[in-house]
Image (cartoon, rainbow, N blue to C red; front, side):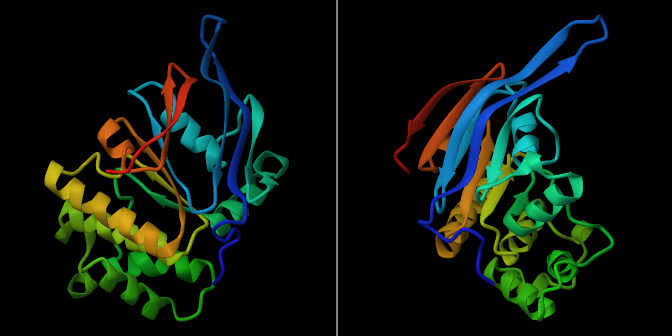
Length: 238
């Protein structure tokens, strides 16, 4: 299946004047994000860096259309997310975005194979079982296909999550602190695998992290502080 935005065809993601403000109980307001603007080209790797409370999670939710901004817009493949209703945003998200979470988000009642198959089947892909097997083999878990998440280590669960995300061939992969629940050695192996799969697939990668070292694995970084974008810089990959 072809991606919506093949590599080199222009921005996969465009963010314009994005802001999020919430009302406080005392009648005041809290600015969680203020005037965030950037774009991500097809095939690019970008890190969103910031300490806890800097607005990273809120920004990620807005980029995926899981929340609604107070002002500004997000475009995926040239389509405005917030010109769509909730169902329209979900459909666009399903076509274009893959997710890798800190907490893995595997369904405990499904085997590793079934977890990878599920989004493929929901999308109506033919040959979902064989494709899922191929991706589990690619991440080194062919022998663990029939195991449930509780019988897998943290690193194995995150590899299943990577297989699930890449099997959908998303134009944009959002990775939220993907090594946050892993020890240092396992985390490094997962990051190596993430970038290896990304290079092979040509997927655009947006990585959210508090780890500057991890951010340096990306081609570019954006830093958030107290909801504001304070710098955007090119990085030399390690």
